[in-house]
Amino acid sequence: MTLADALPHALASARAGGSTVNTGDTAWLLAATALVLLMTPGLALFYGGMVRTKSVLNMLMMSFTSIALVTVVWLACGYSLAFGDDAAAGLIGGLRHAGMAGLGPSDVHGTVPTLLFATFQLTFAIITAALISGAIADRAKFAGWLVFVPVWALTVYVPVAHWVWGPGGWIGHDLGALDFAGGLPVEIASGASGLALCLVLGPRLGFKKDAMRPHNLPMVMLGAGLLWFGWFGFNAGSAMGANGLAAAAFLNTLAAGCTGLLGWLFVEHRRDGHPTTLGAASGAVAGLVAVTPSCGTVSLLGALVVGLAAGAVCSRAVGWKFKLNYDDSLDVVGVHLVGGIIGTLLIGLFAVKAMTGGTEGLFYGGGLAPLGRQLVAVAAVAAYAFTVTYGLGKLLDKVMGLRADEEQEYTGLDLTVHAETAYDHGVLGHGAPAGASPVPSSAQKVTTQA
Image 1 (cartoon, rainbow, N blue to C red):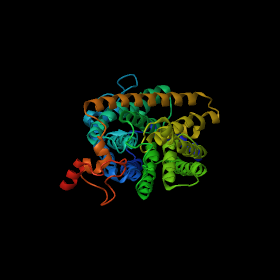
Image 2 (image 1 turned 180 degrees about the horizontal axis):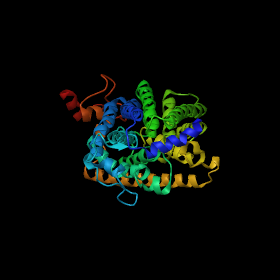
Image 3 (image 1 turned 60 degrees about the horizontal axis):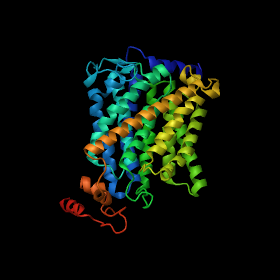
Image 4 (image 1 turned 135 degrees about the vertical axis):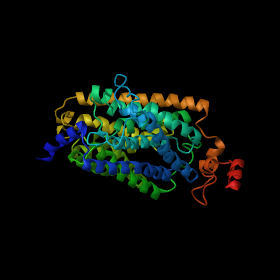
């Protein structure tokens, strides 16, 4: 049996599953779950290196607190609402498993323990919330973030996850759009939400005037490496088994990350004359973002094209914020929203029957219908995530405030919010405009207390 023959059977097994635990599948999903969880600390380093020295710790804290906040919400009711039996015409699941009720070590989802499946899906929810923090870096009130994350997870991520992957979800079940590992609920939802939230908060002080360069590029590269490493669990783990489909998704993930890196560097070199380490890291991430929905639906050739397209287009898209005047601090919109859209739409062109078990894209004789379904799914998720997040952001900003005050932003959130600094020097006064006091009075008090 060839790989092309084996993959449809692997896909059917991964989706339909059986009634007993397969130890090989379980071992692989345990490893994949750990890999995906590692992605959030990796994201913390990636984002932490991209901000200025005065807000490094705050950036790390936004990712790490997402782990704790989303976990509590997921166990309380998030998993049940996302993956429980449909309760409202494909829009949301029920509360049968709220508090993980009725789930024990002997319950099986496909060929793996249900508790493991729930934990694997939890790690997706965690990093999706953490991704949004990059759009509002340097200026978000930490207390506001702590409230925003759990509410956002329940009102945006959970419903979209049910639409795409849940039993009876309208996108996956009724519409028939394809998303193997999270282009819609992870990449597009986080990117659209990041855009909404950065519009609510407004631009950073000094945006388009002051240099806001990454303070630690080796940290950025380390974070990108950890993300890439974890992405194999993210994508190949979504096969839900140690099978040929997982192997194909694994290889597609590697290939797209490579062509994304090369595509970004090519555009960067032609545009600026210099291929940079930040460009290499960002390009790899762009390719990985785009292949997330398509890694289990396209051939190796398709994955190479998906990654290359994402690297080239996203390298341009990150500059749109300066023309359109929205301050997406760490390019969540330019990489995750744009990359997610590219990867999800290209399924409609490059999907192959050997991977999907049925659906074929336009370039393989499937006509325009698959592309149309992908387009409807992208538009619906982007519009929903943006609208709900914008409304939630406005509400929280009115009730408790989401924007740090000017004094905190000038001095840096590390010192003023956390009473700590990442380094012994070079923290105070970074980014303050000419004439501003380098150390406001409250920061002096914090320094004395620390």
